[in-house]
Image (tube, rainbow, N blue to C red; front, side, top):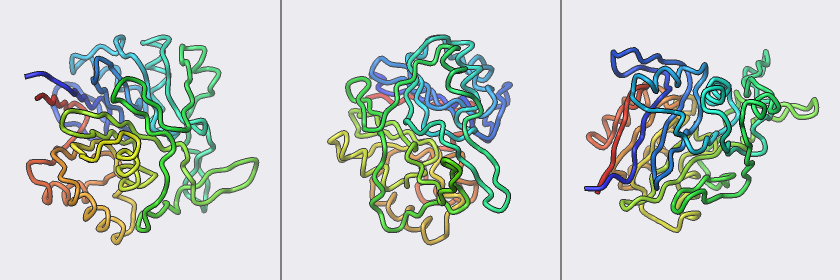
Length: 280
């Protein structure tokens, strides 16, 4: 048997193994696919470094960093990571440094906590991606995801500021995912799915030319949404013939429990410290 995809969850809200792993509100996943090691997001505080040691992974060997969007809980560990790893390409949307906020009554900045210039001085070679980009045969960065579904609504609690003007809800042009074409179909790695999970999946099919969706891992943003949207998204997922669903982070514990009940053995809990190997 030959491995075609490896995943290691280096940062997540919860901890799954009692071996010194540290949890934090955030997400970071190491992906090994097509001979490439991709770090997807960096969590909140840099705990991905210590966690990677416990898990036996060497982040010095990472070929590229992909940032799903500009929220602090996905970018906060980037400075620690760059200090350790050094120079490498960092793929992100041009709006990565947008002034993301929440709590409209008392605005709070929740964007990336570092300046672009500081990160560049530590070795970040930013490659800004607006359209989908194939970085290795069968490995795609989504670029901007078109919003086409009727039932997936923007989160009214999240907004951004631009030239002193409030834009609400936050359009999240910078929300991107990773699409890996495997022998079993597309495997999708999510940040927070602010673009809408169904929108992301349909975009993946269009970008890759592959209709089968083998697996999904990451934050689905089903925790904060209205019940009607959550149910519509779950019904959509039921129709995908998924073989793996590892929803975590902003999915919320209630929705995670619901998905586990629906998908049974095809669902996997994905706390920090969990890892998965797929082979054929």
